[in-house]
Image 1: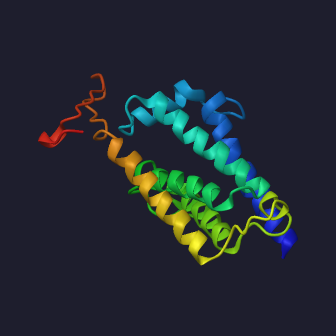
Image 2: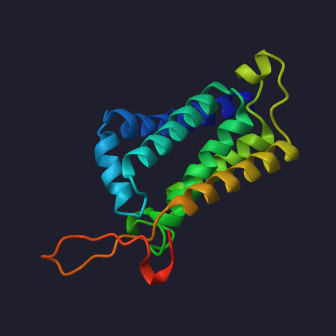
Image 3: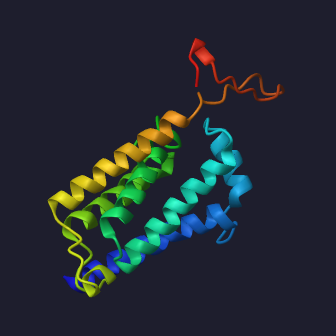
Length: 182
């Protein structure tokens, strides 16, 4: 069981950290803060660059902490919050499966993160090495609550989605679409 938990943590944590590196540094085929910021701005996250940094840091720190088995419930909360935001923005309305742009990947990563918060990182972890009891139903609920609060805060900070005009007209963003302030 311990080797299985280590395998899950290394692969999932490493992949999530890689996504953070893509957003923050433009490495590993990523867009970097400017490209990711522009993409996030197209989803109503304005200005996009700070949101790119926030998402990149959550993925990098959450991924590295999961990989190491360090502060596992906090790492899970970062991962779950980021995946909730991705599912509610980038993947919404596209179905479940990733080949259609659906939320399959985000749901998988969030579930693994939350599962690790519940079962703990295992004995081959920094949490165990320093004597931290980092798992259980309460840890899972706390991680989920923190993730829900964090994701809600980010989603509430989002302006209304970008409104596209005709194909040859510039894109406009109106933070008071439908008469509602952002």
